[in-house]
Length: 640
View 1 (cartoon, rainbow, N blue to C red):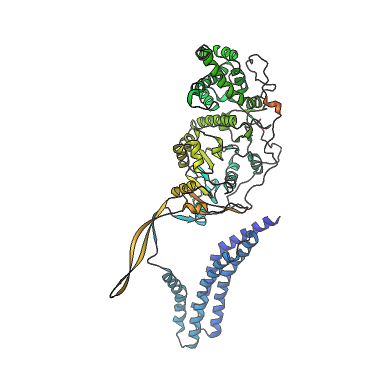
View 2: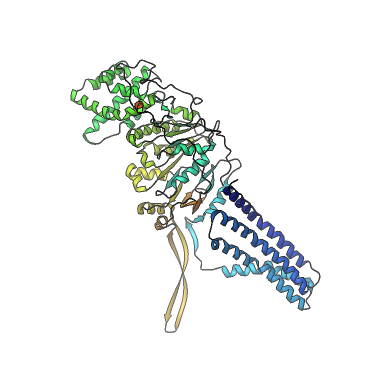
């Protein structure tokens, strides 16, 4: 057992002792007061000392256990001495009234001829009732500001207590920004806003550590993760999960291919996929873009009619690269023959412009199509809904445009399938979209978040600034997406616009206050108190901008969670993050895998273009990127 584990065990013991402390002190105080009140003789000076000694023991116990916890915290977290010692001293000072009052009354009674039948009952009343009442009277302020309505900030401790009280036995618990959030309260989506270094990544990792272990057979839980930083595979490997992990990164040797032939089974779906693969353009090129989309969708439909479930993206790219091949394929089926007549009988210059538009976009897809043609496994998006596993969307700066387009097409199709599911209280479909701005504009996100909650959809979105997010999605769409996230976390930001936006979301509070006014006249001066209602921001924008950056022990922020409230504080991360696994971030394919091998003839039905076509695989055949990396079973308890 290393030093960290010993320190954590010691801290846990200290916490349990502090929980038992009120009970222990109450027992000692009860017997002390009973011993004093049940005496039948007036205590002598020695007897008074004995009673006071017992009371002093109570005060010592009251002080020693917090001090023990203090030493434990100092040894683990190296906290400042004054921060934790002062509350312990105040607690000791407040509890000293018990022995002092008892000793004083007994001392006076020992020198006076007082009736012992009423000395000790009076001492009991004076000890337990009078000092607390006096302290409460002294601390009361009739002119203290009173909260009326609005947003009231609570502490992290109060937020944790509310979360624990709301949890039902056996309910899943999510680690959301420092609180053990029950699944019954996590009914909405999640938004995390913060600058680089503010703690977004560690917050996402802690949330995934609490969510992903629940994904295993017969749970009806699954997750999709957008790997924005190309670092998610080692992180997942270190979590010791109990489900397969499948990556769709075409440039990774371990990546599976998207089985487009199974998922694109209608003209409507083909048109939507084509719209994602060929982005819209403005100006005089808009017509050629729309025509290119129409031809791409028609080729996918004709491929489906010719070889249901047997064509690949490489087949589509090769077909569109040859005008005669595309024309022959479309003319084979009545459903697409009219499209062939419409485009291939046009003016040669118009047709050439359309062909150039298609070639420009298909050329970027060739490396991905070739890599997927050599993948050892294919996966249909329907498999994700029928099984329980984690799907990872890849990312690579060398082919950022086409990869983003394919990711958008995959998310669009997943959104359609998800919204077609029946309503369920048990099903969970998690979408972790870190650095959503970097993924480009995903039109399906807002619709997925709006209609998917009752289907079991839970989205996690992380952005750096609201103005950057609005630049990609537009003001209205960006505000719509962020507004659909009921659980929000605001970490440090250096953007004034983002800080003001966060302050507006957290809101304001209405307070009743009294203002003292002094009036001076010839007869003297007078003072009066005037009542007024004021509205103040619960959080100032500058407070968010002055938060500390995350360190190795904790990060800081303001948080909004329905059912819990609005709270602020620091979230401890030291010793809570799982270590990285032995899986590599990225295993590149050989360069020759990025070239499509074309024999110059139409691909026969049932074949796949490329030297080693991928075959469809069931989930039982799909291997995780770390299939030989040890035991993946792990018991997951309540979040600490």
